[in-house]
Length: 272
Image (tube, rainbow, N blue to C red):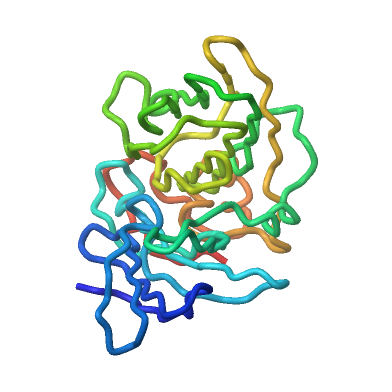
């Protein structure tokens, strides 16, 4: 199954073909000198999870939009179902014979507020360093458990403390200078040196604090909440999280089950 095939002219000549391969939902790139082929498979351009690519132009940048699946019942064990549109990524073409990459788009930063003194769930968390061996970023949650993102020389992984990872991605090289994590509702995306390396979901309660360690030493991340989108969000992920319950009830919206619940709506509403 090849979903949402997209053709794009390659800067060095020829054509790229992008498409998500089901059921693994991995966006793969191919290259050919002519549309009639032969097509050479270059490999994935992102970790598993992003699918249904679309390409757009914005302020001189070539951006890739993609979808992320939400889990039914808003629980980590729920079946993957209808998804949401994720923030755009910068499409960076690589050397001939190598797959392009998805990177952090600086235009996203205009939707971030100033540094936060208190923990924020929907936020960008930026940690800067110099050639570390190990990075640990822990988000304090009471339910179901603290969420830990770890980067080593071999892989980037995210999961609940003491449990198997929700997602792990092999890394071709050591981290160099930065790790950025973007959280919105249950969705988590991690960018190592601006390259997208993790993209998954975690159904938790609200974040109560963030602890960062670089090679075992405490570090101070820059936390910037996502700016409000102009209207109160009423999609299924927003109204079932603790901070949104009161406002959701005031608007007459049924909050439904909490994150991790085993009963409730399928959770397939689109966000604003």
